[in-house]
Length: 366
Image (cartoon, rainbow, N blue to C red; front, side):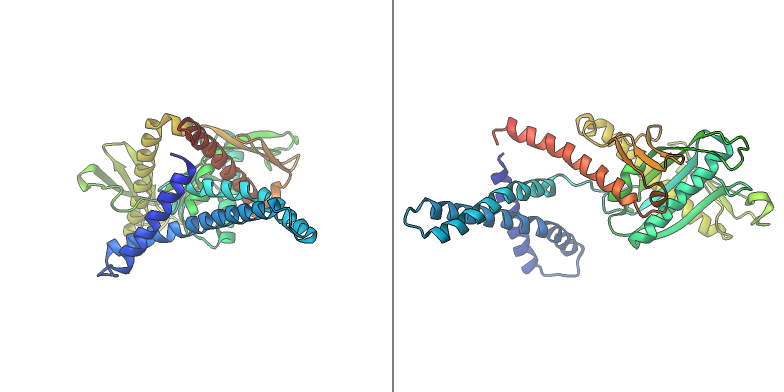
């Protein structure tokens, strides 16, 4: 199928949706909401198609004008200038349109569960895990997202063994999904008296939150244990069994939560994390089944894959998947410059997927 054929189909479907919405008898129904969401999603694509076709018509008109030997010299000069401008703009319009037509990840609009765990490196790894967790908290605040801590296992020096949070807002997963993996730090630990640089790591997992219909969890598949909360250095210790541990028996996934004083609230948060992990496992299985699709993505999303290094002596952050280095370490950890990394990752992913689509179009005679 050629690009023109695809564009014709998109416009035809958009017009079909317009008709269905105009004649819908129950604007309050779920079906109407589904149609409206699809219609709203296609609107910018159709606007881009119209912009491309308008530019093509204008270019053809200018070409005819330039072919006219009787044309006034001053008018010809203006036409040539406009012709050159449009000819340079067309590839950009077409590229942007192809990107908009790329298959969307169904999870892109989902909220996420963020999990950060200390890796190799002892106490320094725990301190770095705290820094990474705080980086995402600041980034969420800058984006206007809601950042709700779920649980944190702290040590006495302000380090995290592990911490998790629910992040909600517009397009959260789309922007954070490439953050999963091993984040490595190189710096002199505060506990190091000799001034030697140590290397340690923290592991990040970004899990898309599922809808209720995505993941069905049966009560019979759960083992729920309650126990007394454990605080760092004796702090925040409850005297009631409010902490909750949920084991999903079929998968073996275990989730704990002791952040709240209420056992009910801890259970609700733990179930939220469990659903996200089950949904993530389901998505990973689907990705594995689509080996060719996975090949063109930025990294594999594997939690064991080293994706980024934060080098304090040099003040740099390097993302190893796209060979991007920024000498803005403080601003990245403050969440301010993290967008520069994320935008580059998204652009690389789009370019790789676009190259595959273009190859397919070529093979089909586009």
